Image 1 (cartoon, rainbow, N blue to C red):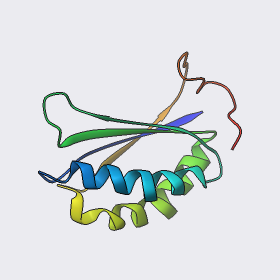
Image 2 (image 1 turned 90 degrees about the horizontal axis):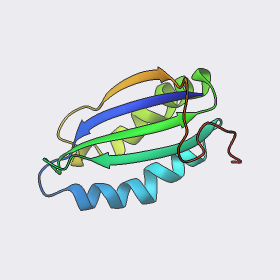
Image 3 (image 1 turned 60 degrees about the vertical axis):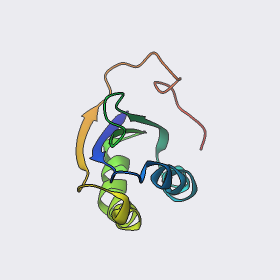
Length: 107
């Protein structure tokens, strides 16, 4: 299993707009991708503008395909709501014991 950690900021006053776009555009596009497993979106308690998305994938190749082919389009769609260009880091999942992300999830 593989995970992409996506860090970014939302422009002041745009968090609700971003969440609507995330639910109506970003999440459905994620779910349609080959190898998609799950997504977690969190925002800082100290700054509602700082957010992190954790997307889980069956393989690194699936994560890379999303990052290279779909992620740029997703970022463009919500670019007017973002405070900066999101930073993306890639991780291998060695162990997970929450949200059933360690097992295979039906698409």
